[in-house]
Each structure stands twice: as C-alpha cells, then as structure tokens.
Length: 273
Image (cartoon, rainbow, N blue to C red; front, top):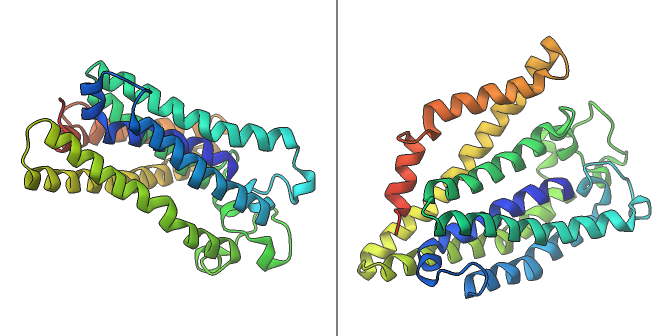
C-alpha cells in the first residue's frame, strides 16, 4: 500500500546501513560505497517496480481504498509516492549511517525497529482505526468497493488475488535482504578480526535478530492499535494518541531501555566497532 510503503522503506534503508555498519566505520563514508549503491539497486529494480505493479493491478487496495481506479488517482500523488519510496529509504540509510559513524550503534538499530512499528501500525490502525479492514478487502474478488465495516477476514483474504500477488512478490522482496544482510554482517565481522566460522555464526544470529525484531514490531503495533481504538472509544479522538503512548512507554520500560533485553541483544549480536 502506497501510504505504508513510505514507512517501510525508511526501515529498509536503516536495515541496510546497520547490516553494513562495521564496514561504514572503516570507510568513514555514507554514500560513496557499494552498500549504498546496492540499496539504490534494490529500490529501483525490486521495490518500486513491485509498488507500480500493485498499483496498476489493484489501485483500490494499493491506495488503502482512498481511490477506486487508476483514472481517479492524481498523477502528482503517484509521482510523489514513488519518489518518496526512494527518498525515505535514502533518508533512513543516511540517518543510521550518521548514528553509526558517531558511535551510537543502539540508536541506529532502533531506527529500523521504529520504522517497522510505524509501518505495521498504519497497516493495522490506518488513520481512523480501519486499517486492518482496508487491508483485508479485495474488490477484484468481492465485486464491491470497500466501505467502513467491510472485511474479508484473514482467512478469506489469504486466497484473494491481492494476497496471491503478494506471495509471488515475497521471495524477490525478502530474500535479497536476508542474504545480503548475512553476507554484509559476516564481512563486517571478518573485517574486525573474527575467523570465518565465528563470523558466519554471528552473522546468522544477526539475521535472526532482524527477523525477530520485525515480528516484535508487528506485535507492538497490534497492541498499540488495539489500545488506540479502546482508549479513543473512552475519551474521544485524543485517546488514540494516549493508547499508543501507553504501549510505547511499557515497551520501553520492559525491553527497549538501555540495559533492557533488546539493548543487550543488539549489542551482543552486532557489537560496536
């Protein structure tokens, strides 16, 4: 979906930079390196073309049902979103690179956690609590446009035309990040004196942290969306912000504060060069 893609690519750019963090410290460079070039290649050859494919095939779903056909979508908005995918990925990469080069490794890793949290939250909550309904409605199957309250449910949506297209896109979208992350992490470990076996083992653990971190962000965003809906029903519109803030504060105190489980896991797995 175009709206959430802008948040997803920020997290992707941040992941690329953290995976190559040790190399970036050696190079003392943000943009003049192969890692940034490969990020641009990934975006231009895989991510943006897939977004165009989804928009062309399912304009209603890809725009979160704001528009129902390609003819309705202003060309300016399409251009903005496609350019935004590149710009925000580069921005995420740049922010994280600067944090890494200044020795703030944990803050750098929190960027991709935050990006994925925002991505999943908007996917689930949207801007009015109906994000999950919009996500689970495929007009090419139902034969009708989405309206508040409509949903195919997870099981029904799982065999929809949109879902089948997403499955086809999963391998070219995810596999390069997993393989690239492993290779860059291993390369960085070797660069700082580890033998091949130890470097490979720690790199695999690093990829595992990324995967687990994405699922943690999904769970947190689901809890935040539920809290936002519940509290807003009690005290009105501002309650959504209160609900989200409460979940984030709890997550910080339980896991994300310095010395907490996430902080310890990041430093143990990725270290600091």
